[in-house]
Amino acid sequence: MAERTPVKDWETDFDVMDSRYIADPFTIWDQLRQTCPVAHTDRRQGAWLLTTYDDVTEAAHDVATFSSIEVGVIGADPDEVPDRVLEYGLPPISADAPVHTWTRRLLLPWFSHRRVDEYEVITRDLCRRLIQGFVEKGHADAAADYAQQIPVRIVAQILGVPGDQADVFTGWVRDVLEFADDRERVKHGAEGIFNYLTEEVQRRREDPRDDLISQLVHGEHDGVPIGEDIVLGMAALVMIAGIDTTWSGIGSSLWHLATHPEDAARLVAEPELIDSAIEEFLRAYSPVTMARVVTQDVEWKGCPMHQGDKVLMNFPAANRDPAHFDRPDEVIIDRAINRHVAFGSGIHRCAGSNLARMEMKVAIEEWLAQIPTFSLVEGAELTWAGGQVRGPRVLPVQFP
Amino acid sequence: MKILVNADKCQGHARCYAIAPELFDVDDYGQSTVRGDGVVPADLIEKAKLAIANCPEYAIDVLED
Ligand code: HEM
Ligand code: SF4
Image 1 (cartoon, helix red, strand yellow):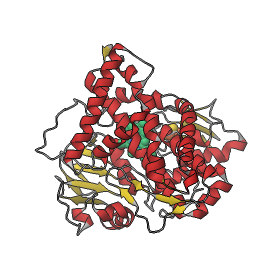
Image 2 (tube, rainbow over the protein chains, first blue to last red; image 1 turned 60 degrees about the vertical axis):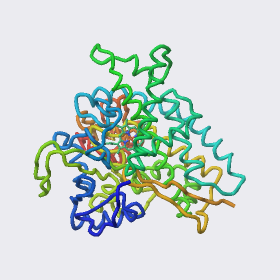
Image 3 (tube, chains in turn red, purple; image 1 turned 180 degrees about the horizontal axis):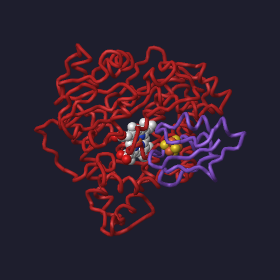
Image 4 (cartoon, rainbow over the protein chains, first blue to last red; image 1 turned 30 degrees about the horizontal axis):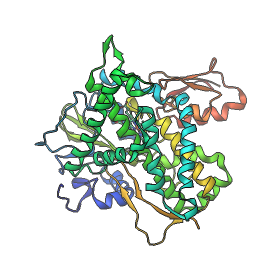
């Protein structure tokens, strides 16, 4: 694992895997936005960190300067030799036009609001069954026993793979996203996902079904069958992007409600606030930071960026920018104006955002319907993941 | 009031549709359009303003106040 020395100066030496950044990135962003809105670090082959709303959204729209060919917040070591190189990575997230455009178009209908209405029924049923499993006990790990169990099963359904493998999928995705500093774990997770999906792709070739993988395997672009690398990359992306992110969103929302009983009580009394509450949780506890690669030497906001530099698109920090949000550090569940960019900005807007919103809404509604009052277990240890995806991983709550 | 969704700017966040499904529809690819001719009935003007203020891409234009 990469040696991690404590950060001394966030402007010139930041580290998004630093324990302080994972515990409380908010004060660090507030400071950087004022003193050094485009921060830099030499760690891990170097990177820039954007923290204002205007900079993050401008960079997200400037796809000519900021390419998506490498979107991992923690990159691979330069001397690392991957076992399997997919020609376009995980499109559309790791592609620029033209591959981005057509691969994205193939995915979008699977996550349209019409489709998502259909998935709502199974999501609600799943949430109820999960709660039944622990409601009588008076306590649960709201992250591991609940939040973590939901998105993975809906993603499995869409891909057409068995939901009883949920824990295995979750393990692989965590290896890739959360433990990116431990290259052995990343390798293990990536291998798991690709070997598994390669077999599933093969199976669908002979025996197509009504699922996303089958559609991709038998799909065409410009009259040519879609290459196996692209099919694998797209299926892997849906798995990777659809699990950790949404689970983090549900977990952070439950953490907020456990620590702010007045908001939980208000949501129970005024259930019509659920939509604005979810938008506010997405804003205040945005799970996802992405990266870009600079395509040419450029002076950007006074900073000398070089071709190949990594730039971190800090959507979570943008969403706490006082220039765009009134009282940004307060969670106001009926906030009327909330132009947050938790799902990104511009052409890479999260393709799964309708699904993610529905899952968060249903998960919180069902939880509050059966467990209207709950709190953190006193003295119990909480853990948070951070870096690319931020959210609670151990969240012991009680509801006596 | 008359509104229009700028198709070049809209990226399908679907905030408009969530706030005012009476005024907007979003297709299977995330593209939003205003229903009908874009003229907002008097009782929906507040909702239209909210949708405009919540669009992360600033994609909803006001053609007539
Ligand atoms: C709360 C949950 C989620 C959050 C916060 C989130 C966030 C994001 C963000 C910020 C991006 C933009 C990436 C960029 O600009 O480079 C993105 C892209 C994407 N997300 Fe999500 N996501 C979530 C859930 C999901 C789900 C449930 C799925 C699907 C099952 C999904 C699939 C995708 C895909 C396919 C892309 C790539 C879109 C493109 O590059 O055109 N996401 N997501
Ligand atoms: S909120 Fe804006 S970007 Fe999103 S669908 Fe509506 S018009 Fe398009």
